[in-house]
Length: 239
Image (cartoon, rainbow, N blue to C red; front, side, top):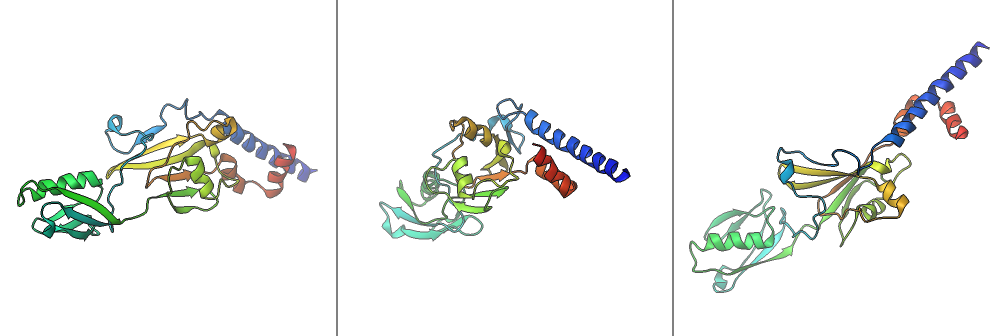
């Protein structure tokens, strides 16, 4: 009799934990009603770009190879590599920091620098070899890792590429991190569960190179290790 009472007490306690967990998930604010769903790590939050930016220009990375074509002074033509510190070495003017610049921005910087030794230089920069754009997916996805970003890819598509959600995934709070400068990272909470259930993908964000997706665990999976296995199975049987 004493063992029966003890078992009933354990089941009752487990039921309370599970009930509280589901209530917390049911009452969790959606991204639309949450007070803050975009934030940055620096102090100038109001001036930060939004995650909806699309069709951004490619930014030069370490290891890229660039061909420099001088229209009027071809003797300066060269193919240069972006060094591990982000600089390129140039004939006549020394080193210029190229990492993080778009091709038009580097064109401007080169023409301004070469104007000191050449008359009205016209320079064209063409990438020869470059780092392929990619995104990363972590947390509760089937195959966490880094993936090449081919064409226009959304968050829902990226999760599918990374193996889909696991059974422990919290579909309603997928985190998208995007670096917008050397010291600024922006993030957004996406309710993928709502998008899929409503069959409305209008809020499905398009990825940019370097984006990171993180899928957290749901609340039930967090408390499961602390519950007796027979009680956990019984809770599913009751539902």
